[in-house]
Length: 209
Image (cartoon, rainbow, N blue to C red; front, side, top):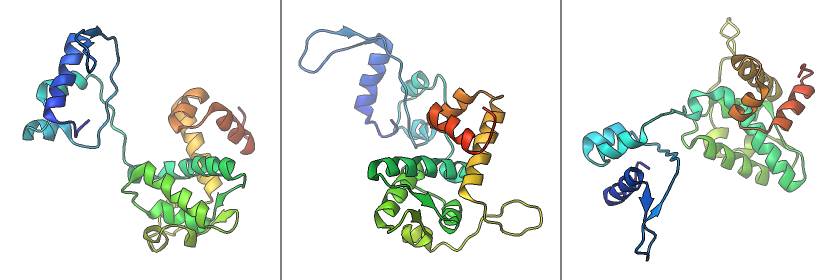
């Protein structure tokens, strides 16, 4: 949305205001009743100030805004997202995949400038390069595998602790359900997994559903 040319912005604004469109090649206007979900990784307020984005269109679209933090701002989501992508790769290749602790530690330390898409691409690449069911540090892209940073586990004594992927995933699921007052269906939607997958994971972790 942030890269939409000014002339197309004017057409979109008219469609929103008039609630009608004219298909290419047609001479008739067609009424529409739509709900618009717009997404961008650009600062539209700055675009308005610089004249690259129409002010009137910005206020038309900005009825309800939702900021999704970058992946580096929600590293606790990495284990669950990784599990989801590995599960999908496992179904496609009919071979179970999992992450070693050293690989997960490096992924938690990485800043992910490409966000979730980069994470998905990273794991797809790793599945193609690995020779076994476990993805190790050397299977990850060099930008990640050569990273020497560590993530403190927050145990209070300053020591770095490697937490298993399953434990990080368990903590993420528990925290999300707790924040939603036990609403598992809403938690599944927020976590980006199916309700069947959520209940299966709860059973795996010996939690009461």
